[in-house]
Length: 389
Image 1 (cartoon, rainbow, N blue to C red):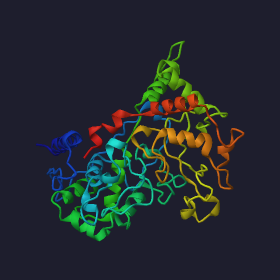
Image 2 (image 1 turned 180 degrees about the vertical axis):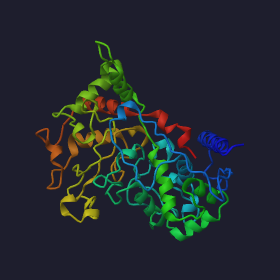
Image 3 (image 1 turned 30 degrees about the horizontal axis):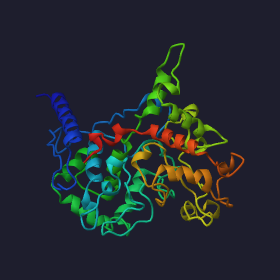
Image 4 (image 1 turned 135 degrees about the vertical axis):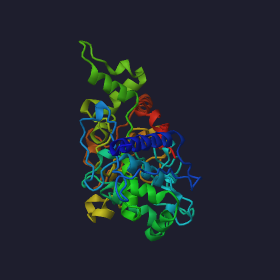
């Protein structure tokens, strides 16, 4: 067999293994199952180069730019390794907790029902576990990650939970030692990064590659936006073609500056923001004496109580809500924005754009708004076998 044919055979084998892992992937409780391929030689001891990963970007998200770090290009092999590491419990002190333990695929990678997640030894955390999807578009230092922008890249974000005393409680040398001595991992790192010697930087790079593939873009509202983009007729689609009358009324509440006024922070179809967040940090008037929030990172008192604006996508899967998980239902969230916003020196000026601080929505308007928020639900994302262990 020629060298070229051998490489093609190897690439096809790698892609078949990735497809197989998407449907039959390793269980988190089956720790020793690691997909292992034996690559054909391409030279004295040289593994084949990793294969570039092709992102499947829906048309209505294609206009949004994203940045992949030059030192961590996304590859098929890197994503496969990152997925395995995301659900790897050896990252914790007692081999009991993985990233996927607090970021569950069936809950849009949030921690359902938990105000704050529990650490490896059952200790309570500090913040509500943020959902993970469409993070590909939040890769700018001014945006950053976590509720308080304690990390500016996905790679940086993946470092802290491993050693955090309220999370995995492990040390990186111990993690590296465990992975280095787990059959299959050295080969997977060699295929993804060209070296069988594992280190913490390569671990977080692989996890970040997997997280960048978590794209959610299939909901009622996504279908409407795609229909508008693809339409060439004289009668373009309308919201009423895709939403119920109540959901359409809820959208009107959402975009009204005198009512919900949600779009300033979360975007909407008319503003061409299907990500449903501006990725910014804001004080939404939760408390008279706010939590430190962004100020804990910037050390700027003006940032007190500012937290990252979460996406409104997949809210039905990610309860409870807010940085501390204080609200159990969407109805509670809407009620807060209707009557509970606190007027403080730190409250974001956008909260008062209506002319009054609180919207004072009617009972019907509240119900309509909740109905609309549920139209940004992507059930295919939470059921995608490619994102399961």
